[in-house]
Length: 395
Picture 1 (cartoon, rainbow, N blue to C red):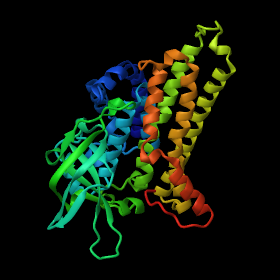
Picture 2: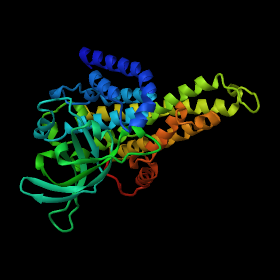
Picture 3: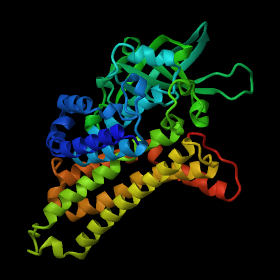
Picture 4: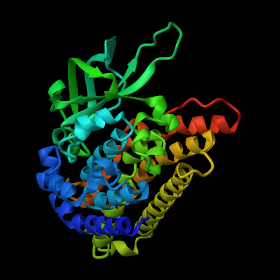
């Protein structure tokens, strides 16, 4: 990394660390708003967090995934909802760098701070027309959508020939082409504002689509203009980490709060100090171990991905499948550790403003994301290890 990039990285790290107390203070208000606090979005923009993986041609820093996920995890120590939105939306700035440059110009031609939300579930109805496609449908779970002026929507394009596989793509639409249905009322990650998106027969030109297979092969139209190696990391590996890694930071925040409470807590029924309870001691140790394990695997995997992107040995299919499984295991591991902290805090932890309660609910909510359910990806890995064919291409 050049001296300038090293300085940018150091600044970003310090700013993320400095934001944690304020994010923690705003967490209740963020939940009440059902979207990020305006000050949080403003501070993220001013700090340049959304630019960490954005193309340099459009004001981005083009840093490594390590740098982005460090910032996301640190932010999650204060507020997982804020970190979740940062993770998802900032990764879109990276993905837009994979689109045809015409699409990048459409979004950032006048303002490089414009943001994009998403819903990749392939539920849209798509028809081919001259110059592109017409698309309609309703998509759920578009995190941070109220803060964004564009959206990525997943859909399948019917094959031209009978028997051929459908073409999975991401469609890019401006806010004038869709409606946000505000229906986000949940028991965790309340502040993410992950509302529904409705589209009624909108035209999407060809250049505002991105083929999933191009992201899988790390050979997208945007690679012609954005040549930094970070844009040759597989799309599937980057995005799944955006929805799993905030749980690591949230668990760290929960552990910090737990230690503050248990150091002085005395049981009201038996008068005993919690710090002397072996179960409480073990819960803290296990949480610390989970955090260390998850971070170590995350950084190790991105070391290997960046090695391949920089011209080293290409990633093998089994490596990619294992990395996909590693990401899916983060949420359940963090949830189990957070649950132990929660129960060791006693009855006071059932109040929603208790910091361990909030982290527990947020991590549980994140665990329900399709990318964070490990069974499907673990079965695929085990099957491939035993000689079966791979069944997943979001790798």
